[in-house]
Length: 54
Image (cartoon, rainbow, N blue to C red):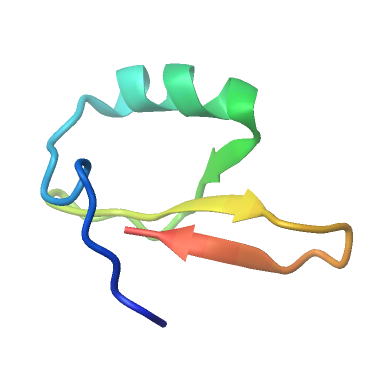
């Protein structure tokens, strides 16, 4: 995976608020969450491949 720096790097958000903003855009939260970090997925095409964001 290629590490990307952005305005959201190291940003802390409430889980409910994050899901409320991202789900309408097609992002889904994955089941690999810890108290200080987690992942969201976005399906890039119909093959089922997904790109993971930290």
